Length: 164
Image (tube, rainbow, N blue to C red; front, side, top):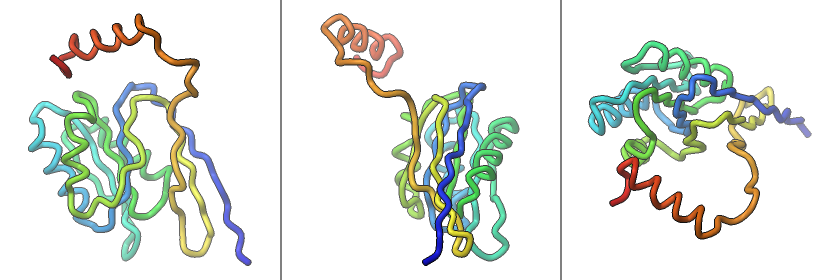
C-alpha cells in the first residue's frame, strides 16, 4: 500500500485580494477565464494562473494587473496540484464574476472564493501527483445573529448596492 502525504498550505492575504480557486481540465482555461472576467466587467483588475497537469506541466497565466498575476502564479505554484486554477482580483468582487467562471465549459468545480486568510489541504502520493482535498476559510461561528445583527446585515447589503 502506498502512502499519501497530507499537507496544509497557509495563505496570508495581506493585500486583501479576493481569491478564487478551482479545478479545470484543459489548457485553454486561462484564456476562457480571462474572457469571462473581462466580459463581466471592464473595471476588474485581476490575474489568473492554471497548473497544467500533463505535457510540459507549466503554470499558464494571464491577466491585466501585474501584481495580481504574480500573486495568482505564486498561489498556483505553492498549491502545486495539476488542473488547479487561481484568480486574484484587486478591483472587484467575486460575486460579479463567479457565475461567469462557473459557466466556463472546462471548469469542473470551485473550492473557494474569499478575501480572508485561508489554507488549502493537499494530498500528495508522490507517484500520480498532488490534489486538493479541500480548503479552510474563516473561523467557526460564535453564535446566531439577533434582530439587531440581522438589521445591520440588511442595511449593509443595501448600502453597498447589492440589494434594494
